[in-house]
Image (cartoon, rainbow, N blue to C red; front, side, top):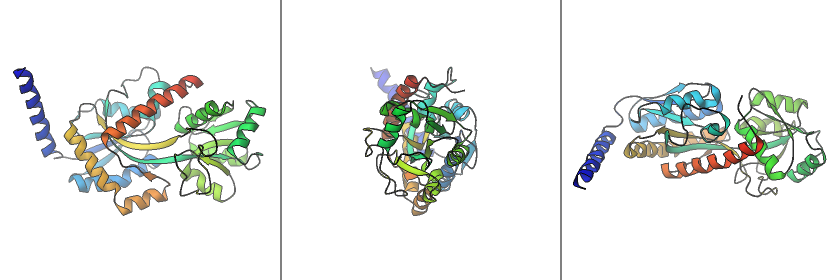
Length: 318
């Protein structure tokens, strides 16, 4: 027993010493998506503030590919010392169900640090479709099984899964049409090649306001300030339906808790900054502040939720 207490004491002392010295060199945040995309802009909005709060340079390392798996794999295999982090996206909760033989375990190889932002999706239809509400759409889909084509930004993306969740919860059958990215999908929706899609809010809002698309519902827990007259899916009658696109910081598993807490504390201060909040609002992003424990619980719930949806729909990434 004395030996065990000694080992625990030594571990606590080492962790405390590491945390007090942290950080003493630049910090790298890996992103599994290209520069210029929504997640990249979100990350680059907070990195200057993180550098100021932590007293060391913080730089972005874009590693796109395989639905974010290349970036996740790099961080999963990095030293758990707080100097390599991951800007996580919904793929952290869904890719284990979409891909076979991942070289890492999303549930075991990461430590939650904190959420950064969340953006709801919006269900939009081509105005030529004779529906003006979610109830209308469900009734139409049930009377035309398999005839409605819904677009997404690709197989297994959060927008595809939002559609699959809608099919399950509404009890309808539609045809999924994947595109290489949201802009291509929304262009074909406007052109009438497809009838509907779940889109990230910033991409669809200008088209909604221009009358080129009709918004039926947003997919967050509450209405969006950008579209205050558009109901949530829950208000529209689908109890419990939510599907958001989010970003958050995680570290390799085994990163000492004091270091995780220090990064989280710095992140909370950055997210409180008016300039950061203004930038996020302009992008349709909601600032999300939480603890590592809260983020870990959210990741667990998201993983279980989407695992069921993916399995029921038989979705596999290409």
